[in-house]
Amino acid sequence: MRRAGMWLAVLALAATAAACGGEPWPEAGHGPSAVELSEPQRRVADRLVSVFEHGDPGPHYEAVEALGDGRGYTCGTIGFTTSSTEVRTIVEDYAAEVPDARLARYLPRLRELADGGSGDTAGLPGFADDWAAAAADPRFRAQQDALADRLAFTPGRQAARRLGIRTPLGVAVLYDTAVQHGTGDDPDGLPALVERATAKAGGDPAGGVDERDWLEAFLDVREADLRHPHDEDTRAVWSESADRVDALRELVDDDRYRLDPPVRVTVDGDDFELR
Image (cartoon, rainbow, N blue to C red; front, side, top):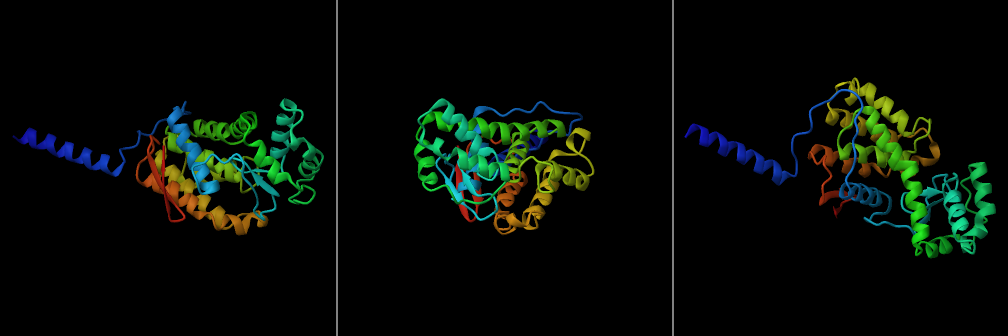
């Protein structure tokens, strides 16, 4: 009877954990990882980024907005900018594939803006409409997907592997950070945040630090950076995006590290179910 009672207690605990959507995290390992995301997990990660970027699971290939953050127009799925080489690269690659693309007319100005790192949006009349029209073309969407992989997802996954992160949620946290903060060597970039988080946590998962603890430290560091970024041009916009970190922290706290759909998140008071 005692053994039966013990198993009933174990089953009750398991049922409670399942109802809460959480389960124990993998034990801390040592050394790099080979973490991968399944197709459903990657889809959830992409839709999570889209909720943060657009307020909707998306994807929003057609999006164009001037945020006033010193980066010119922010465009497409993960917020490619005209002040960098990102939008220029997408338009160049698309125009090479579709020579009569209307977007090709903007290349001289896009090159000028990218070369100067300028946040100016002048000299691009009609650009937003032509970008949105091109988004109906699967070839244009493919160009955005390919660049999003190169700029954000792949660097985020590579960083996760070096750090010894072994969960899809850990990859998604670094992926989303690469989208918003970039992967450059500036104080607001992903590498700098990783360094500060590792110091705060007393090491990284590759060195035996619990991954959940490291992610909590990382989200603390990222939230502090969003509220007080080194780049003054982004300060007003970033200080309003702390809910981005709150939503990720909720997933960590609820032990939803597998990212198996459906994944429920709350951002800016709105509830989303990601599948």
